[in-house]
Length: 344
Image (cartoon, rainbow, N blue to C red; front, side, top):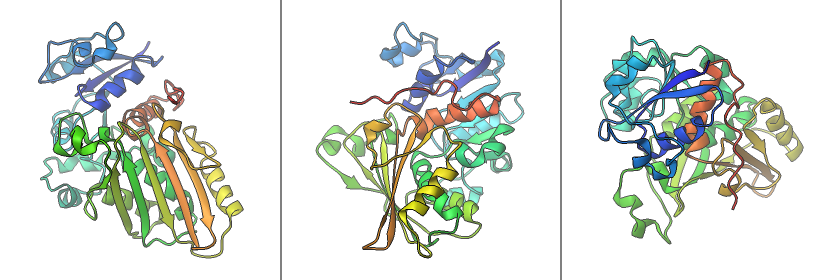
């Protein structure tokens, strides 16, 4: 019998991407999909590319518990998810939350970086950070999984092998990232307005981007001490994908062969991490749950350079959520995630 799952907030980019993956997942059945603003419409009315593929009617969230799902995905913005986690605190289903509401250490840290009040401090005691390559054992029995941010996924996976072996300095860890516009969500914004994005390229959120502290806190856990992350995102005139270039200072002598062995060993049981012989591109991972990683040592500057590529809607959101779900259900973590990259 297939596992019943529900999706709360399916009208955005990550919600539709989640349906794209789950509709072909062999072990689960979507039993309810909700939207407060468009309840009564078919999912394919909102996302026409699902016509004749997935025609389920959108329902209000009040109908959720009648379907008795085992897993519920909250594909909602930060600041909203926390209200639903609070509402469902005593429900029988387990939750995978796409927002940043429970990724950080405490409500105080959240409020400092997100500039919003946090209304459910109790959720932090149960939340597990959902990066399977680092926290698989914790994810298995979690009742609330905080699905990682898209930028943090590539950055953390790129830095962790060397940091965990004390091979690089903890201050500063420099992450320079470029993202497609879907990372800003489906709602229209001035920054993602076509004339402002097309034939353009710019940094944003310098020094204050909320993913900075998410990256830093997880890396603190990895190395057991306080790190300092310098993170700068940039907006690309493309729809999806993130490339991150990371600059690390070795703590001692190191060479290419030693770096290669560290990454190979660290990710030997990680089916979605691919170590690449040359820098990856966005289209190398487009539509998939892969994180491609390239590393090199620059003898001239003495710096290690690491490049990671992910699809922000898949490994950076919906695909990673399905990977977490698979682990929670005791399935092979790659079940339903064997998509081949869309290139060109």
